Length: 489
Image 1 (cartoon, rainbow, N blue to C red):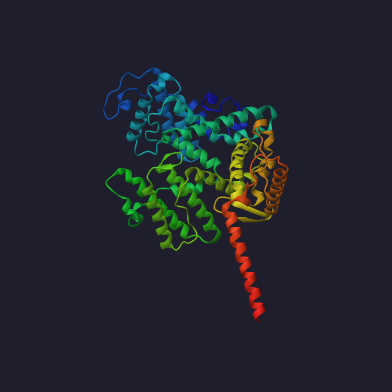
Image 2: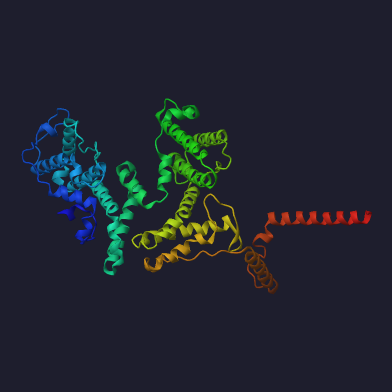
């Protein structure tokens, strides 16, 4: 029966010894093996909420409650069998319970089960009994299933590693992993993220290496410490609470930044900038790339600069004009990719992660290709100027294709998913190409074979031509002045 409660898709984890090392397996097995106590009453003593009466409880629900009652009492003595932290045991038990609601006859009584749990906790408040208040929050059956699917996947993810080294098991594991990543993306896109909040946080903490940095920036804080700085954002309108909350988080994060020095401050400053743009886009955007309340956003940015000045931080500035939300999101993706590069590279032996890493690399490669020319000027492969330091690295050791090759991504992806290498263009090669293009165009014009204008590119650009004429004139004047001085002497 244990396999019914481990939501691993079509994966058959047949290594009993390995599976038994999982704390999740132990807890699920304990719950499955627990015998329900027929002496536990299924009446208003537990199912009634605040003295209200409930309708007749069906037999399946009553049987489940009797089992839950025994499990909860045993969890009070969790040291006897649970090898992990008590809170983790409670989480495991709650997800086991989610799995029990797949039956319609039991799901119909979900509120009764949780009310009974609530009443049991209130009756035994002096005990350290497992308790998760209103954890179901009116989840639908499908939502409960999705939550359990992703949770079980994350907790047992390490068990899939060895299967990816076995040829006949690799495809089914890759399909399953892809399915779970798609499920996560669907959870992120849902209109009410509170439904999957726990699972989203769990997923990010496992697969997003810089998640802890952003998590620290998002943590709640004591409002009193920052009241003087952000009090102007307070009003009787509850909608303005989001402005005040963002303001005090900015203040806290910049104060923390001021305590750092050197490279550590530079690194965390870049995280802060991407965090700030992301928060602004999340809170104030009315569409994909439009700010709904520009006046408030400008005030938020101004408060940030005021704090920077007071703290004496002069090396962490951000753009406040012509805010492009899509562009900033892309820059955040690039920044996080470069920050995580070495960590991804060091995990190349973990073949279970390769399929998802490879798809991520392909997406990053498109952004890399889009930004490299405007961010980097190459005089040679190892000699370059870097104009976008807060989100882009011109060092070719970070080229996505190197990681793509090292991870051997071609064997994990289909033919139409293959990635092309983004190659650099040296300044001398670029200028030589312009000259060659001009010569070829000129020959065609002379021979009367060209369709179009000779003037294409920077040579016929009015700005560049104007600059060229001005500098040419200055050069002539300078030479004339030198000749004049020589003649006088």
